[in-house]
Image (cartoon, rainbow, N blue to C red; front, side, top):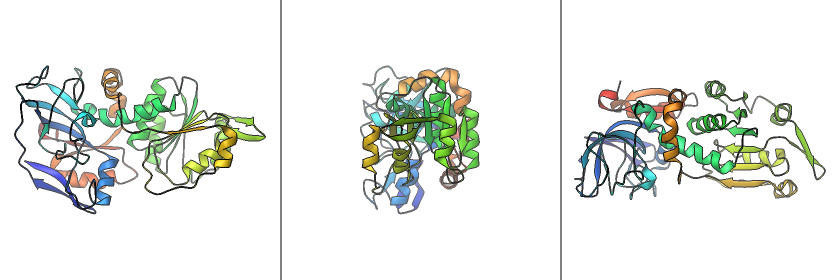
Length: 338
């Protein structure tokens, strides 16, 4: 067997791997699909987590077939198709723990049905099932924005998470969505998902465009655009200040992107808007809701996958995932590798 590990800054390798034996509370998953996440790329860039130089197993967006079940595990059967919820595993699979899902056989310690292990609904492909984790991240960001049908929303960044947010927004009746991204391919995907407009923020006067699309609102002697909620899935250093300058009274901003450096904030302008700024991290409760929605949204979910490669080409996949033209890069295993 093999396992994708980080060995240093910019150094990811497929290593020979001997899977630990499963204990009585564990299950083993024969992997069928695992998506490449922006977090994987970030961990490689910094040389591993929790600190550079730490050999780090990668992969946390996994789906597969149950291969072994420990004697004390309840409700999980050999041969069952399942999704792994890495946040509910003791070692946080693929994010600093000993296991990563970019391997042929994944050990899930202390497995619990409905918690760390979720059954895949009938008729759902391995690749769509493996989209559960990033779609749960996207759903949590939308939940934190507290949007309602009829709201006007701006999404910064149309990578896999931003596109997932657009999918959920439109699914909830929020059809007045403006997507912002530098890459024309990603903007096209946003429009295909139902965004009202998709703009290159470097090529337009953003305030003027949002005023046309969402109108303007006056409060405390200043004029803001009519956008109700902004979701930052891009992490560009100018976004926070730009949104504060655009915001109407009681506008909302949710930050889901990882900021690695401090940014300046115009607090004086923020004061007069009484806007709310919050963050969204992970998916505390959203994964079961994503699984439940898969049967009716499977075709739209599949459209978020831009590339599919076999496990043997995972290093190549990392390079593709780092390009602005890509959406989700999916890695397949075994008979799902082609």
